[in-house]
Structure formats: structure tokens, C-alpha cells
Length: 259
Ligand code: NAP
Image (cartoon, rainbow, N blue to C red; front, side, top):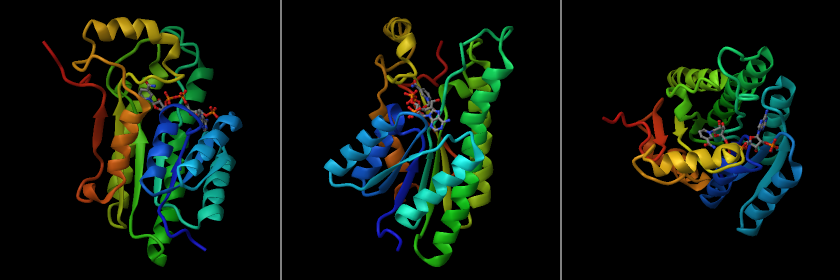
């Protein structure tokens, strides 16, 4: 039987921004599917933390770049909760080795595009089909897909070309699904985080401490997973019902061109 509460899949929610989103959506009344690729202990810890706060969650291992794993993720979500209302495409990796554009490799390209673009595209497709089915059966009234992109979708970093290009393409992916799914109704948005404290940015912590202190962002602090999670929680609610295909900057004002 389908859950009476809305159900959210958050990819890559064993840690970092995804964990923040999973916990926030649980607090907002969603049953949550905590997806991870390798760190089952950390995913189980997120599930336990949600349960301790009175919520409901399951951990599902799936590599979003793998078709069979994506099928497993959607199947396990439906088996656990009977419906899908929200998909947050959060799982992502940085450019492997952060090589200069003149030394970039096929291997990094395959991994980054597989995880950061192909995975989210086909997971959106599969989740949308399940959402449409839930809406037609009357189990759900609406759906939302949120794509976690980046300031790197428009700010060039010459040592992360594949990452920047995959994030840029995610903007078009957002608009394509937003257009196609509007009628059902399923809303699709993109969130562009700025510099957020997580394992991904740990190796460049000191460099960004300095750049933020020097004024990289009008709001001179690191972002947190909670900063991103709060915005996602608002986007999946009812208040943005006449909006779709939009990009929300969660970046301390980084996107403002300044003189
Ligand atoms: P993170 O701390 O490195 O965490 C990455 C998460 O994604 C982990 O839960 C990891 O699971 C999961 N993951 C990685 N590859 C996966 C795959 N193939 N299939 C399923 N799960 C996978 O990263 P983060 O900083 O929280 O970043 C989250 C998202 O925000 C990414 O899309 C990133 O590009 C974006 N973003 C981050 C920043 C930033 O400053 N941190 C800024 C802009 C955008 P396991 O641990 O189990 O492997």
C-alpha cells in the first residue's frame, strides 16, 4: 500500500549536501529514500537520524551512472513506499584529478558525465514515469524534480572542464523536463549552489577560505548543506506551483556580476 505521506528520493544523500536535503525533507513530512553509492555506514546513519527525529527513511545502494542500479533505486523506492513525489538529483562527483583542459582525460569525462548528467537524465525519466502513474491513480496530486547543479554551470574552471560542461547541460535538462512534465503536473527546477562546505570542497578549503575573505562572494562565508536544503524544501512545497524550469542561486551572491 502507498504511503500517505509524500515520498522523496535524494540521490547521494549519505553525506554532504544530499544528507542535508534528506534530513530537511524528512522534517518537512516526506518519507525519504537515502541513496548512496559506496558508504553504507553513512547512509544508515542518515536513516537512523531521520528515524530519531520521528521520520521514515530507507537506504538504497545504487550507482546513478548505471542503468540497472537506477532501475533498482526506483523499484526499491516503490517497493518501500508505493509512490514517488520528489526526486532530488544531487549525487555528483568532481573532475577526476582536476586536470587542466589541455590534459583532460577520457576516463574523467566518462565518470563525470555518467554520474552528473546521464544518471540524472535517465533517473528523471524513470521517476517521472512513476510520478505520472501515481498522479493518474490518484495516489499523488503532483510531483517535483530538483536538479542540484552548480555555479560551475556558468563559471569556467579550466581544471574541471568536464564538471563545468555537465553542470551547464543540466540547465537544459531542467528546462526540457520542465516543459514536458508541466501538464501532469510535475515541476522541475535547478538549484545552483556556490561554495559549500562538504567532502567535495575539503581539498580546496584553505584556498577558498582566502578567496571568500578577499570578497569572492558578497556574503563572505562558506555555504552549508543546510543553506541548500532549506531552498530545496521550499521548492518541493506548494508555494511555487506557477513556476517551473527555474534556476535558484544558493551562492552568497556569487552570480552577481560586479565592477
Ligand atoms: P560530496 O560531499 O562529495 O557527497 C557526494 C554524495 O554523492 C555522496 O553521498 C556519494 O555517495 C554520492 N555519489 C557520488 N557518486 C555517486 C553515484 N555514482 N551514484 C550515487 N551516489 C553517488 O558532495 P557534495 O559537495 O555534497 O555535492 C553534492 C552535489 O552538489 C553534487 O552534485 C555537486 O556537484 C553539487 N555541488 C557541490 C558544491 C560544493 O561546493 N560542495 C557546489 C556546487 C554544487 P557515497 O558516499 O556513498 O559514495
